Amino acid sequence: MNILLAMIPAFFWGTTYAVTQFTLPDWPPVLLGALRALPAGLLLLAIKPSLPKKQDWKILLILGTINIAFFFGLIFVMALTLPSAISGVGMISVPVFAMLFSWTVYKRQPSSIQAISGATLIALAWFLFDPSSITLNPVGLVAMLAAITCIVIGSSVTKSLGSRMHWWTVLTWQLIIGGVVLSIAAGVLAGLNPEPYIHAVQNTSLRNVWGLLWVILLNTALGYGMYVWLLQRMSVVDFTFGGIANPIAGIVSGLILLGESYTPIQYSLMIGMIVMSLIPQLVMSFKQKRNTTHAKPCQS
Image 1: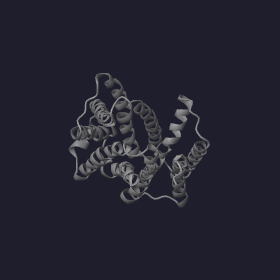
Image 2: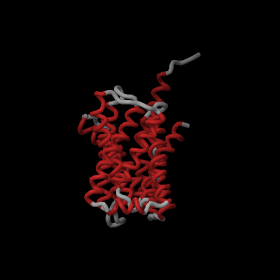
Image 3: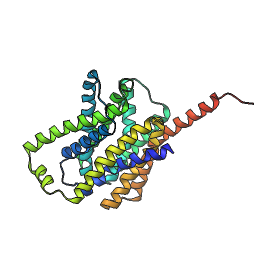
Image 4: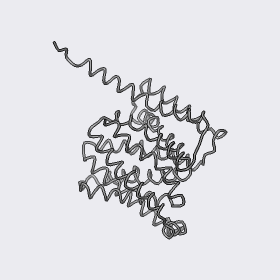
């Protein structure tokens, strides 16, 4: 049941790209990031008030800047420059980059199944993103790689806070801090080039409002709130199984809202990437269940 619930935030996260292109196509990415992060953070603070300790503000500032300000800004650059399905499927390569980061920084050698799955996923991505078969904006691809890097580094920092702060406090304040950083950045950019910001505000439509509400309330407040709630009731490994809804949502929402379509070979490559991203977690879950079963004493 928890895995089914985990699919809910993953699904909403996967719709970010198509919803942004469909409802907010001309809005500046930094402004969208600020409007996504700050209201959601303040809403979560109102639901469950919390205040970090004095010594935790510095690390939260770093985390909010990397995990929210940079990441949200990059996500909206992707949303406005790449097809929704490509963004959703491309982001499932995060475990590969996390594996390489852990191997390089912490000298944690990946298991054979992780190495094989990671290599296969990279190979499939290479064929999917081949310029001869699909035309992709290089700015969007660079933003995708940078966003993945933010996730890997931000997750490492977040994990280090696990014993010092409550998850809800970390989540709430990184959204607020990241939202403030993005608001300042948006103000600076608007001062340098005010036209896109003025155009967005003066021409706000009902479709724009619906898009903002979707991103703020469902993608962020509900999505991240459920993420924190579920992590207290299930393992990270189990939660990743729900993550399969993310790329599927990207593919389906892109098809429905934007009319995106691909060749059977391209869809096969996408499915292959999704499967390869799940195999290490499936193997780990199977081993954990087997070890638990063997550890139980025999009863007569």
